Length: 91
Image (cartoon, rainbow, N blue to C red; front, top):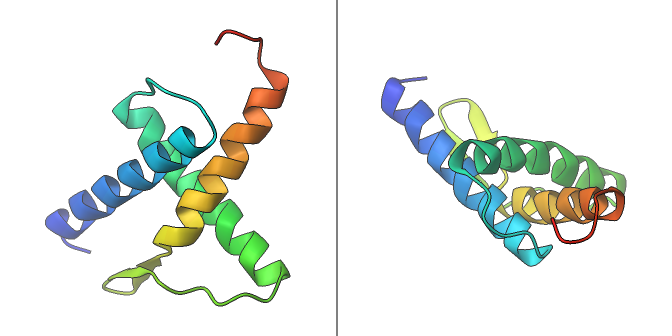
């Protein structure tokens, strides 16, 4: 994977994580947290999609590395909603 491909992957993960956090009601997350949330969301989202036997598209292809954008956003929203259950109110 090239440097620019990796940079583009980080940008897409950041956008996916930020969208997932906004859907779940969390605001003001930083760029690094959004990137991590995007990758965690991609893992959770594709796991749920495979368990429910749903199609894994659409994704963005980076060489041999696919990134499922829709499932990353939904997985990130699910993960943030789960975190909101265990965090203190007002945070």
